[in-house]
Image 1 (cartoon, rainbow, N blue to C red):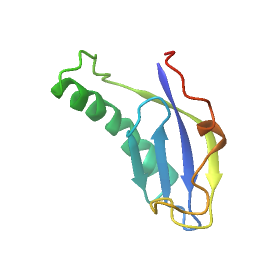
Image 2: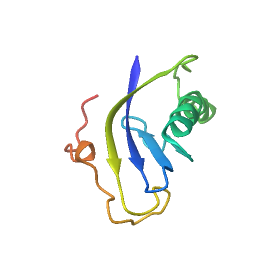
Image 3: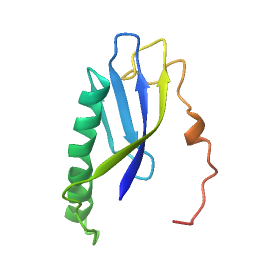
Image 4: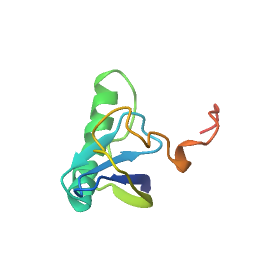
Length: 98
């Protein structure tokens, strides 16, 4: 299974990456590749955290990441409340469906 991600790239190349379906699972890196590698490591950690809080989930051992969008912004991708906080892929209406 490939987890979908967006890359938010700052003017200096620093990048934020997050998994769409795993709220709170993200990584920051000095480059696109570094953020992607850190995100692949963050996925098993995310599921381990869920398991430690009583969720019965399988922990992926070799997760794959599919980049579905790259967005270049003017500010730093690590700053909250920057000029580009909402991505096109984030505009899907919330629902209870999985």
